[in-house]
Image 1 (cartoon, rainbow, N blue to C red):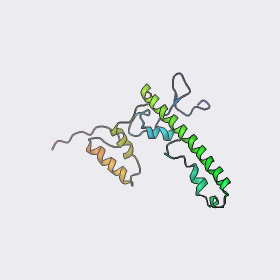
Image 2 (tube, one colour; image 1 turned 135 degrees about the vertical axis):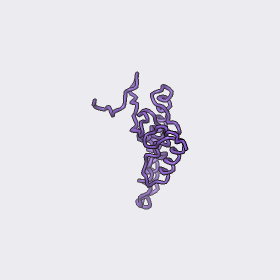
Image 3 (spheres, rainbow, N blue to C red; image 1 turned 30 degrees about the vertical axis):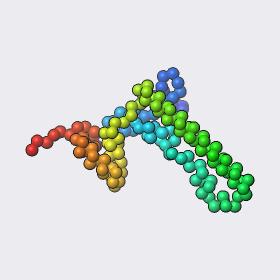
Image 4 (spheres, one colour; image 1 turned 135 degrees about the horizontal axis):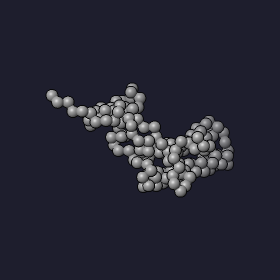
Length: 149
């Protein structure tokens, strides 16, 4: 694999990598939600988390006002950079969707993906029941055959 290539395909005419998902049940690898795309780009969280490390420590209580203001402005700068990166990734997702290189998941594909989660999780169990009720096998994603009584 070439250096710097993380396994995605290069989009024509640019340096944009089209990320690929490891989807279950035969869902194509270019089918993904915006949240999944943002997680692949490293900006999946709504907040950057920069302030948690700096403000959360007990040392903030021992800083002078000038030091505290410097720390807070540093946090603000990190947050601004994170939000700019997140907005850029959201715009990239919309661009790739409009070009047809990424396909948003259908509600059924979202449920099948959720059904392949931790089996102890109640949301996973509910997704499995919903997919079966819709007439699909949650393991393979294929339509179940109707049983005649």
